[in-house]
Length: 206
Image (cartoon, rainbow, N blue to C red):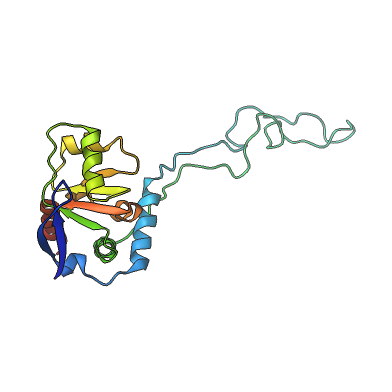
């Protein structure tokens, strides 16, 4: 069991907390982390781009002029790619970019990502994160106290005041414990987690 320091919103140490090694102390598998990030980015792609080929554009039913004797190059249709309004060669068509990864691999990748943050001392546990109002200035003050830059803030449940206070701060993102994912963990410098959120993560992944 690894021990981490627990801070309050003023950035003062208020105790320590034991992290479950089954989640925060695994052997880091960089390959799985990479696969998980690639999968997440690929699955975000819509794949809806479309352009028409020469068989799909309208017009061009007959040969524009006879084959020989006109002085022009031979042409079979005014909807070939070299004509204005013609079809696109190798046009993009709607496709599915989905990358599959089984559940065990996804869980192992997330554990590896969380473990790497703990090992790099970029995993900050806060005893609680309660804001009376949705004020960006207050959230910025908390992050400054915790020395957290480019932070991913993880709460046990969705907290409206936390979400609204953080959304205008550059490079800061909020997520509930049940929505935590590898890409968000790895793309942020520091992971700021409430004690309740740590308990929720351990309950699901331990």
